Structure formats: structure tokens, C-alpha cells
Length: 244
Image (cartoon, rainbow, N blue to C red; front, side, top):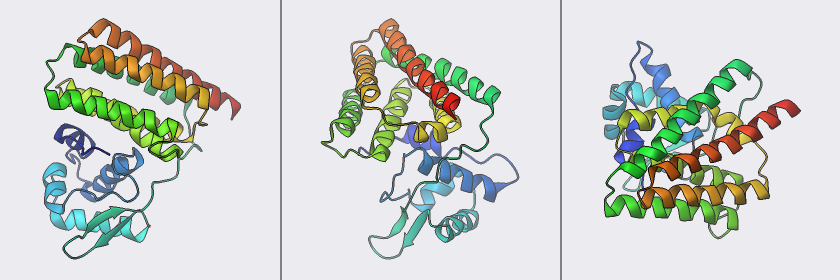
């Protein structure tokens, strides 16, 4: 998997802003793991980087990591090749899905992700940004075909990285943070939705159209392709909830 850009890492591990520093630090760390930005086997950023991004003390960070160690989400290793490594992702929680909040989350995602695709296509991309988008697209396609692993977790991780990479190249930290929050609000349902082969092929055809429109500097086409894509996901999520 490609290394995350500073923009994506900042959006995921954004600063703690309330008086509940410990609780919010745990929340931020679990969000990064749940979204698949840091998957099982990945090493989290170093303590110095995390404390700077989260705006918390090293003591607070270590307390949060200690609790995640105790509950089996991460493991801290010492030594030259040490660090904090992800062991597992939190299980999706579907026991308290509020229909109004769910509908609001879908609306929020549609607005921010279509806007991100449009602004990415309007941006002047560096060669490195273009390569990163192409790499993320290849990874999510390979996750379906099996050349980079065929697990559901592998696909979800690659899908999230692609969507966040699109937001990141748009050049607005606020927009990237909004896309992260849109994913966070739906991540349990997205992780629990059945992996349907026909849908994955369709989704990846849409992914390709989105990325190609961005690389070709066509904002209208990028926006339409993303709108079609998120609408398809929303339809599956609604169907899944109705069956429950």
C-alpha cells in the first residue's frame, strides 16, 4: 500500500478539541484503524508525530495506546524495528442504526465526495499526485481481481484510500477532513455490506471513470461519475438495512 500523504494523516488524526483528551485520542486512533487507513500489520505513526497532530501530551497518547493494547487492537514493540502495530479492526456495530442519522450521513457523503471529485479535477496536479491516484486506482482494482488479495478487508482498505486520495489532491484540508468524517459516519455499514461481485466490478468501473476524469481535468465528468458511484453505494446500504 502507498504511504499516506500528510493531508490524509492530518484529516484522520485531527487535533483533539474538547476537555476529554484521553477519550478523543482513543476515538481518533480507532477511526484510523476502522477506516482501514492503518490495517492489521501496519505501524502507526511515531509518538512524536501523533502527539503533534492530535495536540495531546505524550502521557495522554501513551495511556490511549495502552488501552488499545489491552483490548487487542494494537501491539507495541520495542527496539530498532519497534513501534505500535495494528492487530485487528473493531467489529462493525449495527445494533443502533438511526434512520434519520443514516439518511443525513448519505446526504453529507454525496455533497462532500462529489465536490471533492470536482475540485480534484479543477486542481493543477503534480506528477506525484497523478501517480498516487493511478496507484490507488490500481490497488482497488487488484483487490477485486485477486492480484493484491481478495479479502473484504483488503478491498475496503483500498477503496477508502482511493476516496481519501481524491479528496486530498483537491487541495483543501477542510474538504479532506469532511470526506474522512463522511466515511466515519458510514464505516460500520460499509464494512458490513455484502461483497457482491457484480457490484464490485461496477464500482471499479466507476472508480476508473472518476480518476480518469480527474487526470484529464474534466470537473463536470468527475462530479457526475462520483455522484453515480455514491448513489449506487447508498442504494445497496438502504437495501441492506431494509433486509434487517
